[in-house]
Structure formats: C-alpha cells, structure tokens
Length: 289
Image (cartoon, rainbow, N blue to C red; front, side, top):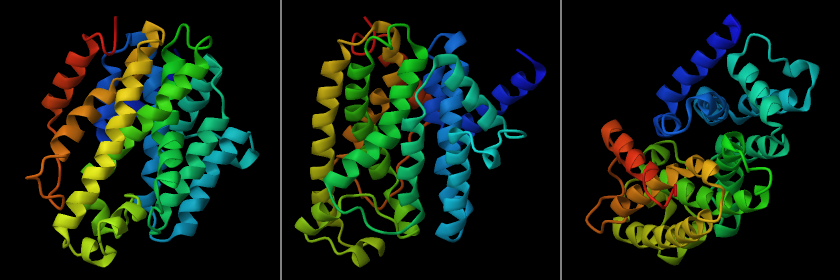
C-alpha cells in the first residue's frame, strides 16, 4: 500500500470510529484484510449521512450529494482528488467489482434527510431503509466474500430485511435528536392511527400515544429480524459478519420497547456494551457456524 493509501485508509477509520462507532466496532470482528474495505463503505455512508447537519438549507445539501453521484458516474466535476473517502470508495468498488447502482440509490434516498417532510407510511419507509441501511450491508457482504457473487440475490434479500431492522432501531433511538430538528422518520400513518399529533410530538407531548405507535413499529421490525436471521443461515459463512449489526439492533429494540421507557429520553449504549454484544454475536451460530 502506498503512503497516500495508508493515509486515506487511516482517515476513513478515524472518521467511522467518531461518526458511527457501531459500524467501526463491527469491523473489528472481520478478518483484518477485509476491514479496510468495510471501513471505506462505512466512511462513505458517514459522509452522506452528515450532509444534513452541515447545511442550513436543502439546496446546498443536494449539491453536496450530487458531487458524490457525479463521482460514481465518472463525471469530471466529481474528481476524487484530495478526498480520502472518495479515493477509498473508488478503490473498494474496483477491488471487489461492486455495483455502483446501489450506492447511487443510497445517495438519492438520503435527499429525504434534507427536508422536514414526515415519512408517509411503511410503503415508503421500508424501501428507504432497504436502500440505505440495507444497501450498505449488502455491499459489505459482497466485500467480505468469498461466495458472495454466487449468493448475491440471497444476500440482497437478507440485507433488505436487515436494513429495516437496523434502520428502525436507529430511528427509535434517535427520536429526541430528530424531534429537536423537527424531523420524523416514523411512519405518519401509524402515528395518526394512534392519535399522535405531530406538533405535540415535536413538543415532547403525547407520550402514551407515541408509545403505542412505537410498539407497532418495533413489532414490525422484529418480524423482519426473524426473517433476516432465518434466511441468513443459508448464506455463505464468510459473509455473515457483514450482518453483525443485527445483534446490536436486536438488543436495542428490546430496550427501546420497554413500556417504562420515556420515548423523549435520549437512548445511549456504551461502547463496552457495543463491543460485548458484537463479540457474543460473532461467536454464535446466529452469525457464524
């Protein structure tokens, strides 16, 4: 590896460790020679996710996201020069012959983050999570192969279920943060069914109705969890570590579903608890034979 490559890889590792410790920790349980590729994908995702916090208006955010789309399309104004995350992303795409289309769809899906429109219903939320969280897991699984190319359809199917699980866990855990910026990813039809008024929710009210809505959302996520874990047993053993984040999501959903928990209270999981959950999962038949 060149000095520039070493520097780019180190930059991505530091970025993921700071911005997305869950994914950083999960890479510690894959073979070292595969870790750099997973960190490159996670760093790319971190860059896309944090655009929302870097802009005060949607248009500048869309311009930043367009730069990444241009990079993937090979447009001249999407040059990777001077951007270590872009350089590492192009490297991992070339090294593992990863498809570009899922990355482009991930970027397009994240345009939703730039606006404060409510998530309409499950029919919109599920593909949104599949194209963001799910796509990242699918690409990670392809990068950690071998055997991924022969099982690509099965990997994509598991990843779609897993993306919903991980996505819902993150959404529910981040509710107080999203409320503060008047953004809500919970399906609006579920909220309305339980009598949740958005203005009251943003104001920290309607706790009983919100709890009922959250219980429904978490119950649906658990169905996806059961299906993902069932189908994952059919995947090549080598790709299963790419789905280790399911262990964290399962743990979080159990705690987030507690009837005694105030949904307006910030949810936190220590780094020690994160590492412990991932270590146990990495040694279980659920994730590895």
